[in-house]
Structures are given as C-alpha cells and as structure tokens.
Image 1: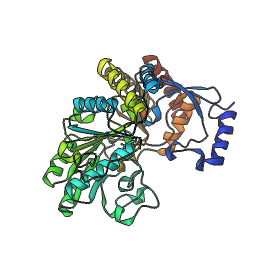
Image 2: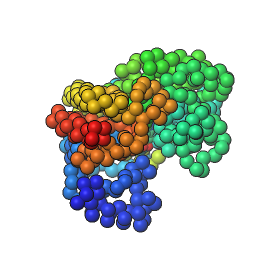
Image 3: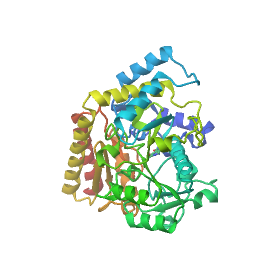
Image 4: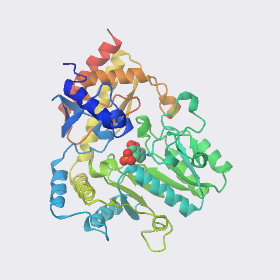
Length: 434
Ligand SMILES: Cc1ncc(COP(=O)(O)O)c(C=O)c1O
C-alpha cells in the first residue's frame, strides 16, 4: 500500500467530497493525496488505514501538551459529568480562567472569553474601533488573523498582489477593504508613514508578535517597541494577535518575553490544548467598552462563549504550564531539532534556512534572511511540499504546505527528535545528493 494514502483514507475522502465542498471543513486542511486521521495520542496520529505518524502539525498549534492529554481529558470529563452550558450569568470556570489570564498576561487587566481565534480578533478590532472612534486598521503582509473581513487581507499573496489590497476571499465589501492598510512586517518606517498619512483615522495596528503565519519570522530588535511607540504617538491601539504565540512560548504570551505591552491581545489555540476556547485581554478602559458591562457600547455576545468544556481544558492546560517544566522541555527539544536540521542542511549544501523559536520550527528552502513576506517568497514552495511529503511517507507529519510551521509538544521526546533528524537526513540526501 502506498504510504502516502491508503484505501480507507481514499474511500473516506471520496465520501467527504459527496457532502462537504472539497471534503474538508476548513480550507487549509486540504491534503493531497488525502489522509483521514482517526486517532491521536501524545505526539502520534493514526490514520484510517492504521498507519502511525509522529505529528508536528499539532492541528496548527493547539496540541501544546500533546494530543488527548490525560490531565486535560480528566478535567473535561469531570466537568462534563456535572456542568452544562447555562447561558445565564458567569460560571466559576470562566471566573477562574479570567483570573489566571489576568495573573499571567501583562496586558490583561480585563478578560473576555469566546470560542475561536477569529472571533477573538474580530471582537478586539471592533472594540478598538469603538474606543478610538476611528475606522482604519494597519496589518502586515503575510500575517493571518482569522477569517473575518477586516483582517482577511494580504495573507498568502501572490508576488504580483504585494503592495496593493489583496482580499483573501470573494464577498468582502470594498468599504472594508479600503479600511485595512497593509505594511511590510519589520518595516517600522512604512507604518510611520501610513499613520502620518492617515492622520487620526487609524484605530489600531494589529500584529503577530512573531509572524508564525509566515513560518517563523521574528520581530527585529526594536520592531515591537517601535510599533508600541508609534501607536501611542498617533492615538491608535496596538493589538498583539497571540493566537499562536500565546501559551506556546510563555504563560504570559510573547508580550511577557519581549517586554512590550499591547493595548489588546488575542489568544486561542494552545490555551485549551485543542478544545475550543479563545480570549481577548486588554486594558480596563478599552475592555469596558464591551456591552457585557452596563453602558458599554460594543456588542459582545455568543451562545458558546466561555464554554465549560473549553474552560475546563484551559484550566488543566494552564495548571500544567504553571507546575510542570513544559516550556523548558519544548524549548530544549526545539533547539535540538533546529541545530540538527542546520547541521544536515549545511553538510548537504541545500542552501536552505532553518528558522524557529522555542517549540516552533520551519525550513525555508532558500537563502536568508527571512524578515518579511517578500523574503519568504525566496523559499521554494515545491521543495517544501516535496520534502514534507517524503517525511510523511516515512511516518512524520508536517503539513505539506509552504510557510507552515512545525510545533513540538510536551509529549515529544528526544528520541522522537532524533528519529526526525535521521528521516530528514535521508530525505534531503534523496532530494539534493542523488
Ligand atoms: C495568528 C492567528 N490569529 C487568528 C487565527 C484564527 O484562529 P481560529 O482558526 O481559531 O479562528 C489564527 C489561525 O490560524 C492565527 O494563526
């Protein structure tokens, strides 16, 4: 049987396509050839044909502790036994999640909970607009902030679309497109020019503090602090979208590492190790605009907000991060993997650049530096896909898509990393030597 796909996977995917457009319920999940996963434990996935994969995809990042983590599952099952979605008043679980985020996240004077990262960003942008009394938003080329119209602009742009509005979907109103301005990541002077040109019109600057949607583009020294200063000087809010970086890199988010305090920050993914929960954190003056508070002018509502199972999973995850050496472990393994990959690429002369931070890694098949989206276009997409498909054939799963990052979790071991390096060595020899 072909390792890349099997009879059961293909048959299930064909069925999926009968009723689900394209066979997947989120467009970035498309896989060719198709795989259908059936089980996940710790660092491993099993597909419908019974094949096991060492997983670095981590469902795009949530599986920080590993899949089906026993402590998280236990807490969720206990909660399931007695709690329900009440839809009236706060719950003790929500209060505890909010208290913990307030305790750990520097900007979190107040906290609101919702269900997905997209929803968190949407509400953060809306409350920023309400607070500032302005409409425009500055985002960065190559950063992704979810599926809502205002931010679904200039993400994975084709080279000819860079430098002009590039909506990521049909159906977005032109008024929305006009109100989102796009700058190059790490390009402080471009942001300054935009803020000056749009005097008193920019409500917020939104940024991934590490641009993980371009793989792993790090902020240059002074970039985030520079954004902070520019936003303050021009009366705009600074929003850190920490949907990927939050909890994966530090209990307090990347803001706790870089020492720059945004006005608002959004969290999702790793907060609940794979259960649906997301959060918006920020200064009280801004957050009190939400109409969950009497007199607030900004709608904040959702049937599933602060869902008890998501909250239970978040509390168990945060508890693990507080009491176990999770970050120490995943950062150490991240270093081991990146150093090993660099040694292989150097020895084989592939010309590739291995990048990453903490538990996140990626390989750009091209020469560095990688400081913005234009730089990322130097990575040979066909080689990235080929490399990852060859790894999949050897039972190691990274999403076979250009510019997607890999994630190490608490359940990965040194032996897993070493096995990955041995497989990468084999694959890269096939690609570059023979
Ligand atoms: C930085 C960032 N923000 C927001 C989102 C949207 O989160 P969700 O997919 O949970 O809606 C994503 C998703 O990948 C993301 O990477």
